[in-house]
Length: 626
Image (cartoon, helix red, strand yellow):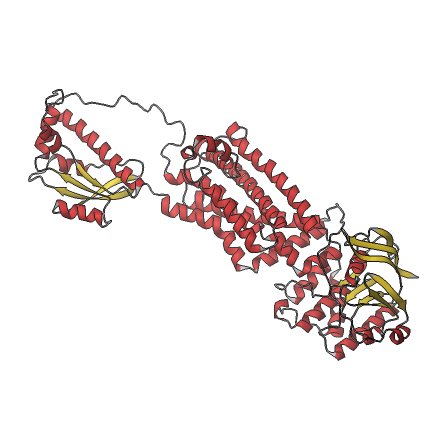
């Protein structure tokens, strides 16, 4: 009986031929040794047998089926250890036992047997802490964990001591007696003599195939170097196995919790919401002004300073100085935002100015002495304008009071706010919060997701998991679901801090806010996955993520009003992944609109549409680049 039949198989990349007219018959319940120097094509042949790639011509049958069909009952050990360094020994064994759907009883039986044969290290030891030989033992144990009918091993005894090597070969022969077929790649021809049959490959061809002792006489070599290459593609079923998907999600969470840097990135949105609420959720912000009052008996100046009005959150906080030069010096040194000088004749001059309000002949001296003189530091634009607005409103109120004191008609501005339709008494933090929720969720998930597929391809478990029956789709979808679940936790933390702890103003539905930010997170995850599917290096992905995020942060209206952007550019930037969703969320929180409003739905639609597009592109590129 034949376990593996290879008939006239050819394979190559573009113009380079790798395998040419390969014929091989690997018998059942036997050990087949495959020898050959580096570049002979051994690795490519193994990958063809495992279904990782397809031949250009010829055919292969494995246990009576096409390659890849029987991988769940095939044990595979690549040349490198193919282990996740952040897992413990027990976590690694459990991960694959779940993929193979082994019962607890069978798992513990197999684990105990393999531990005694291979002398496995302790369950709680991290793979990263093991020696090369110990990692090799764990890797070999995985190949036999599911009681396979076919085992494919690539140099299993390299890095092991001779006693363990003998133990491994004894175990292989005992497996053959139980009906297991074994394909073993080795560069030690004396070791291959322990196999039942040996095939020798050179330059992409199977030169000889026969009994070891006969070939030893013909090809007397002590060491035929072998290298394992990786990176091919595999055809996987589109059927989404829920069980394996849950195992992958669990693995993703386990790996995430072991990386402190990732955990810090995870906390960015909640931390930024906390910073916003602590620093900017203030009802009043004092602006210090150095006051030099030269009046000997101050009246109007005192009334003004005692009735300072607040505009938005800003108001003037007077600090008295004894001279004009010292007040100006305080502004020069950055201690004060402005120096304010009241002339010694300020009250009398202001009286004269009020009484002569209808007189166009008021002299310049009176106008100057009745004016408040400012020396302003405009480097902090917001503070400078807040100070001027506060003084202007305070002066307006004082002038009205003086007119009434003199039984004169009070001059009122011809302006009346009949009703505040939206967001009455809102503050700066109320305006900023929607942008913070959208932007920092976007930053966090793009940064995290942009590393996922890069790490997955470099992860030792990736190749082995694919051979065990885990498809690219399952790996991809597991990362998307994992990050969506983490996003949900992030959003709950942000909303709890904002609305429960600090009670930021909100007129909309909490459920709708959660839903909109969740769609933004899903869109960010899709963009991050697309980046990680295209890029091979983590630091490049980080740079791209930073560029994409920060270029939008200050041009999308998330922090600064979108109306400040030049009109022609605004029409383009409006469709960025942050701008429109920020406007939608702000309209929900500050205007109380629902999802069916045009200027709420458009942000949701943008996220869903672009997110689906990015996901499809990322999946296609991930399959090709894996």
